Structures are given as C-alpha cells and as structure tokens.
Length: 413
Length: 91
Ligand SMILES: Cc1ncc(COP(=O)(O)O)c(C=O)c1O
Ligand SMILES: [Zn+2]
Image 1 (cartoon, rainbow over the protein chains, first blue to last red):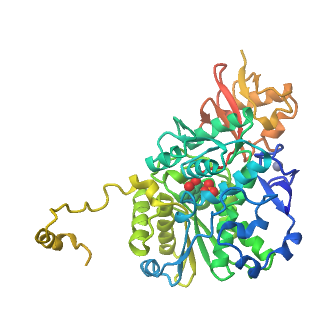
Image 2: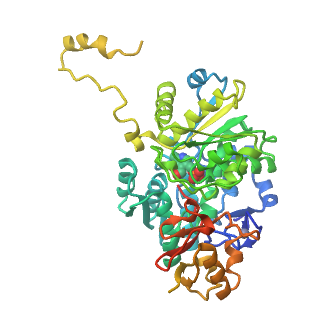
Image 3: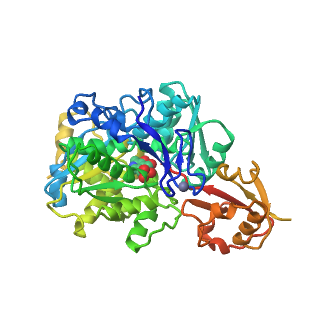
C-alpha cells in the first residue's frame, strides 16, 4: 500500500512520476516525494506507532515504498539518551543524545537512508546499486546490498579513514577509490549514472533515499514523549539530514501526532569545510563551494547539493549555523566519551563542539531542552584520536608490580 | 576548433541525445550563448532569467568548478572541456 502521489520539484513545482530520477529536468532542483496525507491520517496514531516494532519502519506510511521494506529491517529506533553529565558540563538543564552511532547494521544514520534506497531499488527492479560516499554511505550500501544479494559499486575519495574503507571491502563488493575529494567523486558518478542502468543511491534514487533521514526526526519527537525539543543540533554535509528533520516535524504536526513545533534547528560543520555555516554567518542566501580540509571527512562536502535548503531550515526555524576547528572536533569526541560513554566519530565531535560553542554565544540557553544528533561511530575514525590518548602501562603479571604502578595509572582524581 | 561541452542526461532532449557538443567563444558565457544558438533553449535551462547560473547547476572547466575561477567570465580555450553537471547529494 503506497501513500506516495509522485515527485515534485522543490524549486519550480514541476510534477514527476514515481521513477528513478535525480533532479528536475527543467531547473535541476531537488525532487521531493509527495504523500497523500489525508489517506495516511487514519492509519497513523501515537498508539498505532507505539505498538509497532522498534525500528524505522514503524513510520512506514511516511516512507516512500510501495510494498514492504525488503532491506534494512532493523535500521533505526536508536536510543535517545538523557545526558545529565554532559548537560552539567555544558551548563544546560536538559540534554539528550540521539545515538545513531549504534544504528543497525553499519553504525551510522546512513543505514536509514540506505534501507529506503535499496528497498526502492528492488521495487524498481535494479540488480546493481552504487553510491558516491564520504564513508558512512559506502559502509551502509555495501552491507545492505550484500544482505539482499544486490551487486554494488562504491566510489570514495582515496584518503578516507581505514575503518571506513575496510568496513566497505569486507562485504566483497566493488570499491573504487577516486584520486580527489568527494566533489570529484560525485562529478564522475554523475557521468556514470547516465551510462549504466544502476540504482545510484544518492543520484537517481536520491528523492527516495533522502526521505529515510526523516525517520531520525520522527523518532526524536516520539521518544521525547510526542513533542519536539526546543533546540536540535545537526551535522551537515550535503545538508539533506537537517532539512529532512524539519520535514519530519512538519509532517507530525500535520498528522496531529505532536503539538506545533517551535524547535530551533542548528547546523554544524567543521571550519575546514563550512560552506553552509559560512553562508549563514555572512547573511548570504547562496552557497559558495569550498575545497574541504578537515579531519571530519564524513561531512567534508565542499559543494552541498541541499545547502540552500539547509540554510533556509536553520534560519526559518529560528536556529543558526556554526563551525569548529579540528582541535575542537577532537575535544568534542572526548567530551562525549568521558561524560556519557558514547564514542562517536568526527561528525559527532563536530556536533558536540558546535553545541558548546552555540551555548557560549547564548544562542542556546540553559533552559532549552536540547537534542544533540550523534550520527556515526568512533570506531570508524580512530585516526582522529590516535596519539591523543594516554598509552596504557605495560607491566609483568605480578601483584607487586601492579601496586607499584597503581599511583601512576590512577590518573582520575 | 571549438570547445567541447559535456551535456547532462537532463538536457539531452535538447541536443538530440548527444552527450558532447561543441561551442565557440572565449569565455564560458560566450560558449553557452553559442550552444544556445545551435540548440535553442539550452541557456534557459542552465541560467536564470537574470543570466546567473542556476542554483543547482555546476559548470566545470576541465576539473575545476567555475565558481573557483571567474564564473561565467572564465576564459576558455579550444583545448579546454566544459561540463554541465547537476548538483548531487550524498555523504
Ligand atoms: C556521520 C554523518 N553525519 C552527518 C552526515 C550529513 O549528512 P547530509 O549529507 O544529509 O547533510 C553524514 C553524511 O555523510 C555523515 O556521514
Ligand atoms: Zn524544477
């Protein structure tokens, strides 16, 4: 049962059928999935959703499939963790971590978008899928494709972290490293997609893929007790997740699942790749592409396709955008680990550090209930903290040696 | 010899299915105007009515986005290749 009417250009409103299409033919604007909300309304209530299995498909009516999900059945419904220790360090009363560092099966929020994209790829009859990726999407496409026997081709920049590369190769798919940055990878893929009949997750499946990100926002509101937070901080690469979180809140309002949202939405980038936050801070309404130079490689997109809409999302919701140095990214990773026992990757370090910065600027204040979006896992970007942590003492296996060493290793005090 | 211009799938209905066409001119703008003379309507799809390149269109001179160069005024020679590419999501 499908509730999708079709696709529509976000820029010029041109309508399109439900097909593998990347952008509007007339203006190149992004295509949005259009739903029949009146048909959905009687099918979704807090109670109905609450009784469903704990994965993103509890929101199936708001995801763009025609049939049952065939890929990524376990994705989503990750914990929303109350973070009192971190809150104390930040000087806020109520802080929650939406923890997609434990999303199934590949430990990032990209499992959500890929679950939708590959399910849709099967509906369209593709036998081969592909993607251009900064790492997490690569892992998610390779793993989820393997799970249903789809062939996959994954294109990545040559300099990605080892964990991201290994975490793709293990599924024995086709990985191609491009000598260049993500924007170069994308440029090549846009030419490949015209030549091969493949389902390219972030190109000709993009309208469907992007909808998967909504589930992150839908879950946050449900887990907070059917309301939106005062503030949410979201990492931005292409700028899709942040716009889809807003769409999620809007849809929930429309379906009377939550009261009207006043949520201020804040975008986070690394200073070494900050085309969107730079535009916010400069008061520009257009994005100037940049050449990325940051340890936060997962969000190093210099030419963000949804940057313009990310910008609007932040400003129209009353939020803002900020960026932080690589040094602050590492501090953010360590702060979250030390205070909450959650080891996030560089994108999470960006989000934590930007939250702290926004609080320092008074843009988020102590009474604001704040959700920090943690979208990836620290085990995949170990290079970021390598050499920054205390080396463990090595001693012979003798009690006397241990007791002699104890005063030195008990650093915590 | 004119400069080659790579055309994205979305615009090939205007070029009779051709992936690569050629245009003559000394700048990106002049080449766009020349290919629009050969394939009427192309400029409209690439540029907004005030002449600026559309928000979701990327133009590359060889490997480089023209926004890192001189935009539409970027100088072009016959040895160069222009590519018109829609903005792409990802991550
Ligand atoms: C861990 C992580 N967080 C956030 C993002 C940002 O996603 P978007 O491109 O939707 O802005 C990405 C994208 O790759 C990512 O890998
Ligand atoms: Zn359009």
